[in-house]
Length: 626
Ligand code: BES
Ligand code: ZN
Image (tube, rainbow, N blue to C red; front, side, top):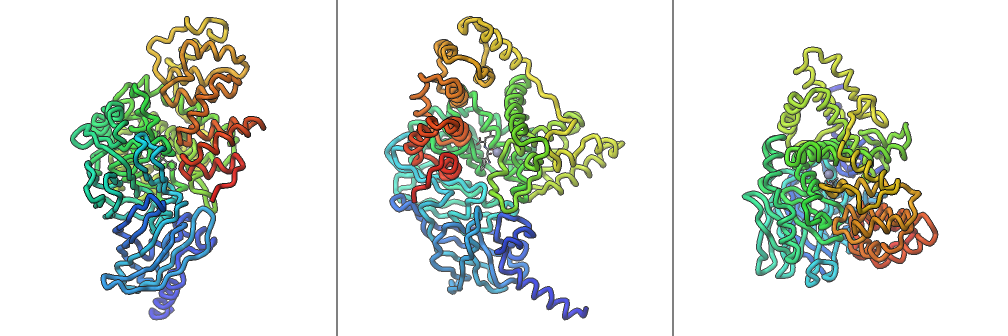
């Protein structure tokens, strides 16, 4: 082939694929099956947002300006969008209007937004507004907040919901920096995953800047009546005024946590590490938005017993936010590593015995999930196949807990001292970039080969491929054991055998001992025996959300009716999916239960985030109100 014709073939190919991944076949071949965009051709590098928050209309309105690196000099920029109302698109500083089209809707992904650009286009302005049903946006009425006076807005962009509030290249493998101007009603404070204000501005206009590059699933905004409390030179907490003191007490150890994490994993790269405690409708335990982790108020147990979630979100500052999964099928590299890092932080702060207890409790959940999946399920592989599937399906116990066990196996096989060299080096080497399972294993093998006298035999002993590309738990899985929990099991057994609850030896029991006790109650117990436990321990009135949740599940299992009102209060107040899903699904097992679940759900649903109502609507057979 002559040089000329080869060049023209490449050019034609570039023009053909320049439209992005708009067909199913394209997406199967694409670097990320959950994004229409082709960042390998033209990549967004920087985002400028100028948005007005309209609490009456439940809309964000304004402009997204994208700064491009059009490396293949293509004439089309394909972005991800879902439920966005695109008004017009302008090019360059001269703001010349250009044409655009929205492709067909694809399940889970929304619609490709294809913008006509020039090979030398550097800047694209998109004027748009969001839909009131935008999945990422949770609009709360004043009565759904702690203060009851002001409305509240929060975003949840992970996994692929950034595209419901910003037109963007919504793939974890694309990183951007951003600036934003956010306009809110005066008196409210706006905060983002960026440098943040600590006081409300008189005119309600806030500007933000994020200089470190992030994938767009980490774009975040919260607006409400918020106060800030400083907890250390680089740490603090935002919350509603009536919650902020309690939050400051609960999370006072955050400065120490940050320091410990730095010692273990290397320098903290993001400047500040603050928390925001959200209203109870927030759908997760925590979300690792950089510089400002979003946290559920159900962690406010009053005894600091649930701070492992803070350690988890902090750990994401290395695993996930600094080195990011390349696609959603690689999520174990994010969440699994993070659970491992979280446990190391917890161990350094609270000791080995306590952390082993937490690990055993988590492992119990994994074993149940693996049992349900069956021995050969591809969904029990660490690396997941998700083409044409909802990327949220990747966030199961397998990614988190099998991922954790894999890292723990590496630590135990190599010895802690040697293994502890690996992680800081890995984060240094790949900071601000993305990682696939393949690349991770290649890097690990290389590192092992450099540091081991007989790498061949070591590498085969590790069974790396079995862990990542095979089902279930390989034979070299670590054995985790907690003597403290064995003692709890023994106490439970003697109670089952007839010892009165008031005489059990519960000295020194933490919330996690109690959780173990509750979770292990046998199905065969009559409900009067639950009454005995309730008289002694008062679990129906527990202010610890984990204990209350575990207990409520048991009260349903055993038809213990006195807990009915507490169950309804909990379901109406709390929007955290991890709690809701098991309770509703237990209720839905009988026809009467399903009826009751629907009645509660109809009252509770307005307070839930749409990432949650989506699944619950389906489970309870409810059609979503438009
Ligand atoms: N990144 C997740 C939150 C998330 C999960 C977002 C699924 C989108 C889909 C966060 O880091 C997380 O894992 N949160 C856990 C807490 C943790 C201690 C396991 C949660 O919310 O329960
Ligand atoms: Zn996580």
